Length: 117
Image: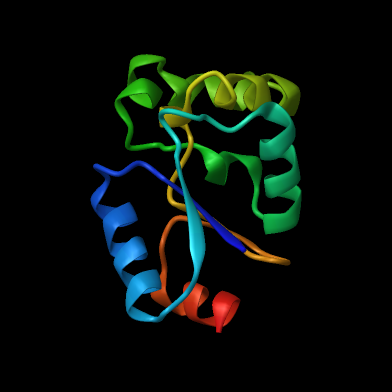
């Protein structure tokens, strides 16, 4: 079963969820704010996604800006970044779609299309 990790009030998450529904894709939903990803999950997803770790940060989020992470991330180790992401789901870019063999971060229709069809 696909796992869809999102924040229900996020417009990008709503678009992605509508796309999944419109295309008849089954998924289990998880609210990233209520059940933030663990460090272990984030490490697994990042590896499976093939994306650089910085792509997992919600750079437009209030927390990201409040913590001044734009400047701090450059000097933080990967371990420190994973630990920080695991403290607050709102720091994590969303939505995250986990399929059998892929992890997609953010929503691009073409990526979703190739991952689940």
